Image (cartoon, rainbow, N blue to C red; front, side, top):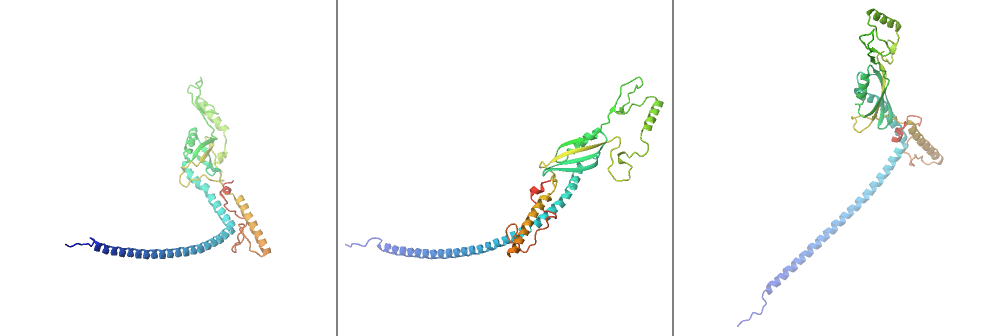
Length: 319
């Protein structure tokens, strides 16, 4: 009888153990290689970041130095730049009125013969349009008011000057059985043809004979022609305000750029700079601008008695 005392699977377990040790050694080796690679790349990235930081600090220092130089130039030339800007604003302001008149003209009715047009500034968003002209009937007087309210931004309108010439229909009398109308200020003409002719001749004799220079008509000199005897000189005042829906290019800001406050600011800057130059000449140090930085060989700011700068918005809004 034979007995097999060797454990079952013993040989297989020995082979599996060897394989496990080989796999574990391979994993350790791979981990060491990966760790070495990560440490190496991280060190290289850190060194590159430090180098970039150093380069950035140098560039930042150079930028700050250039900015200081630029600020010195800006401060030293502030007076000249202010003068130039004010001159530009004043030149642009000269054409604001004519441009606005051209924009408004299509809204003025043709039967209103204009003799004068002007604008009164009120604020940065409001103004007052003043119109003077000649009309010949009460209906035109009413229609002109309605037409002017069509101007974009019109919020109110006032009118004066029209002198009505109403026609009166008299009651029937023994002498007047027709009741022909006549204007107030005159008398009805008689019905009898002879008497009517004599009344018309009498009125003609009472009138002016020759050149009367009525309404400045007939004069060779240029000037405003007033209304004819049947017309009236009228005035319209239109209040305009920016309601947010104005046509493109429209503006109601007719406030004049204020050169006084701007010149005062420029004069103060000039005085400070000249004082700095005098102190620098006495001490041998470079002169400084009002901002405290030495100018880079720049001349003094422009003459304060010349055109001033446009100044701040507050200065431009003053009248």
